[in-house]
Image (tube, rainbow, N blue to C red; front, side, top):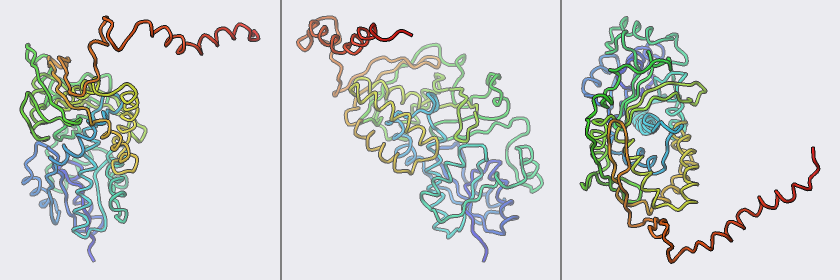
Length: 402
């Protein structure tokens, strides 16, 4: 009986080469599975290419709306940013794609699932942990960990030998991941952190030099931590993000250059373009500054760090993340309001925030004495708060001297 293997297929170099490789090495039927999470791609040619490369079928799951609402926005509410800069654009795209891959594999009666992730990267972990969580019975095949090909150049040679066009030149070997949230760039000259990114690297955002010389104001409305409007216009999650992507990209907002710590212990340099996402995170943080109390805000920052690590490490479908989601949702009940921002040549400048649930009291914050605050109360507070320091200083005078 011929085996059936579901392949996470993008039409790029790695997965294009994997189709004939699987058929040669496993005597199998390959079911190609594409997950559309907002890539700028025409999927009819992608499907045709998969079939021409030897796949028996090619599925395309249009997942973008679900991706924004159920994967991106939960991370936004949590404030999840990896290592202070990376907005998890690849990290939270992988679990929804892998979930669709599992669904197709089960429907097709496949006995194995294959992915094209390298043995050095994070994506292998993200795909496989999702598969283990949702389909523990499935065998997982990872060609990069077992085949003889060891470089992009050798992949290109293999593709050429098998008559597979890959649309990647030997002169420009950037590895890019694109979805509605971001575009990432890795490899080639970026592998040396001493190299400044080339002028033509950015494909979404304008460079600072080419951004408009005049600032633009944007107003974002939130309801319980979820963005719902831009400049007063109510929008569903996907068109809202697309609108902010266009606005942010025009002003060069959301470009980061980071050397990050991969899960497997390797440092990796990448340049990310995340215009709309960067605007949303800044706006959300500003709104939380007036709607969360001090203790909740400080503890949520700890949770945000843990949440980002879980998502980055591929643990989307784990009990801890589910529990953290419940905590985050509780904190967002009052994160409703409007944030105004000024965008100018890559900068996001706060320009006002309002909320019906604000905890900011102008009378308390001002130097004018209000009804709820007496300056005289500060003396007793400081005496009690500083008592341990005073006691230690007094008693330490009697300690044995070294």
